[in-house]
Amino acid sequence: MAEGLRILYIITDLNYGGAEKQLELLVGGMKSDARIMVAGLKGWGETAERLHRQGIAVWTKNESRLAPGPQSGWKGLIEIARQFHPDIIHTFLFKANISGRVLSRLIKPRPKVISSVRVWDNRAAPLALERATARWCDCIVFNSFWVADCYSQVTYLDPWKKRVIANALSREFAKSPQFQMRRETRAELGIGPDEFFILGAGRLDRQKGFEYLIKAFALAATKIFHTKLLIAGDGPLKNSIGLAISKSGLTSKIRLLGYQPDAARLMASCDVFILPSLWEGSPNVVLEAWNAGAPVIATSVCGTPELIEDGRNGLLVPPADASRLAEAIVKLAVDPALGKKLAAAGKDCLKNHRLGEILDQYKALYKEFFKVC
Image (cartoon, one colour):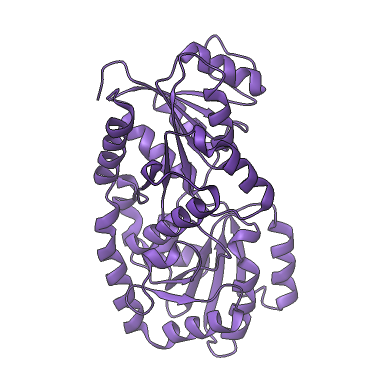
């Protein structure tokens, strides 16, 4: 990479989530090749703290660990960009994408701009803003071909500005020593050795479709008597999901775990991991479940079928269909050999998501588009 290259990464949130995880992996892989600063449009969070501990300069809307610290809010973002003089502004998620494009017009010399679009949002207002500002990007990176195609059709994106780069699996996640602790983890969670343990994980919001998972579990539990469902995560629908569990009459079998920093340990101990999302980009959590040796059931939405081929490396069901999801759960519960076969095939697919190779693609992208590397 070019000596003195400066990259300003901007992301909507620096707490925890799939996009935040991919940003952290990219920054970690680039920090020896470029001077880097990360900006978050919301408050200080878990990802911000981890980056800060790695010696990365981090600024967020409400808190900065920079010295001297620039002011908060939009003016603060402009100030740090002008002080940093980035060659490249690389943004993640909708609000950051729009902000980064506008910011690039307010500083001199004008930096090159990469946006990362990681999920399809077909609401009218976001699409209007995307159409109005997409031309200000030098390149847009997508993590699935499905999202790339939908976005291009709506925004009329120049084909040469479009790139698809898959999500990476963290080396740290892959080397976790806790994958051998299945029995101990299940005991800690109150899961018996012969119980069929179903795991869901993700942000507790409408996108993730957990209400349908609860309905599906209630149906499946009439046929699988020794089973439990645990859901790891936190979010705005925590109370309503808790209420749905109470109304199901299965509070002894369904439990919310809250946010779990060590999801790998849970995945390694479950009998099936379920992703009941109503929409997605390319879900990191599928890769993590495969790596932990868990079979996956997921909804056939957006970029998920690019990862999962139904019946080969997982099971796909329609979104918002509790009956079909229940059928898939029962199918794996009565046929453990099928679960092992799907999990093994999924793990074999991880060769397409090795961190080193994904980092090489980003470095090649910088060289191709920006001629500063």
